[in-house]
Image (cartoon, rainbow, N blue to C red; front, side, top):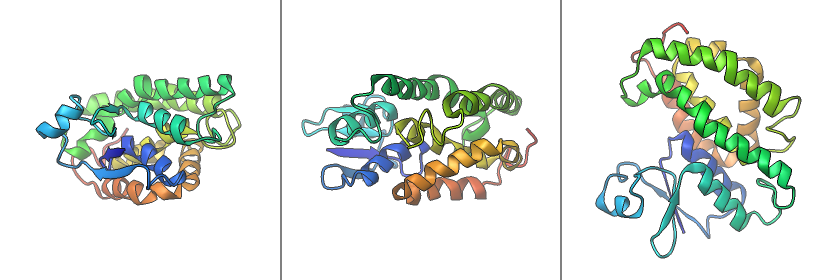
Length: 222
């Protein structure tokens, strides 16, 4: 199998963390897809031309970060460390966080963060989206998903945390926005990074980009 990733992308970081954490390098080859996702070969494999993409031996593939993480755990995580096998209630809670991250939380980052990648964003929308993070999403994470635990519904990390935690790096691109992020969220983010040191070489790529960003919106007030 081959795992096609964009090394700088927070969407790839969770999958990369699993490869490193479970020592899967001999089973899954990591491929840097930067600049290759619009090639005919890649589109033939994945018409959505996105990463991460997990390519199988027959050249079929699955994509979407949550689907790839679930597959990797189902196939390789025999103890259910990162995605429980026997505890279906816990598994359901993890699935809920994964779906919430993709359908609710991630879309509300668009205008806040994607100017770092040359995308035109709306500054008024950035403020509105950050207001929603502060008033709705961050309280949801702290009071419901964490609720006194170190990680989402658990005191040990799972793929729910690998999906949600790395996204926080993106917020550092707007320095004054990052300053306002609740300390509980920042502490949770740091716990996720500390739990998966194998992904830090990739997280650092995004962290460096965000911290050095000085383009439009970098110094905007939230």
